Length: 135
Image (tube, rainbow, N blue to C red; front, top):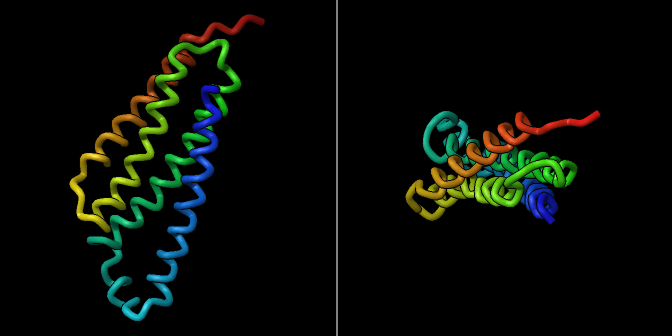
């Protein structure tokens, strides 16, 4: 069912990025080299990890919202499967940031995810604009 998977993945990804937030708290407050971590607040891995944390939760929330809307308006909107799929692919953006930080991978997944999520949000906006509401 279109939207159900978005909601499920959204909550799971949100939970994972919330747990990642605990790691960031540990690194800031309890890690042996916490002062070095704090001093690099706006640069390098510290900055990138915060970007991943924020975008991970944002994109998870967007999947939950998009999933809910796709379920609620499933009979009235067009292209729901494509919008749903693009929204899920969007999760690659924050995961791609983490892959860059921890695995040294190139930013291709960040770009793919960002383009997919942006496309899904704009496409859904267009579909809602076209929606005919009969009262």
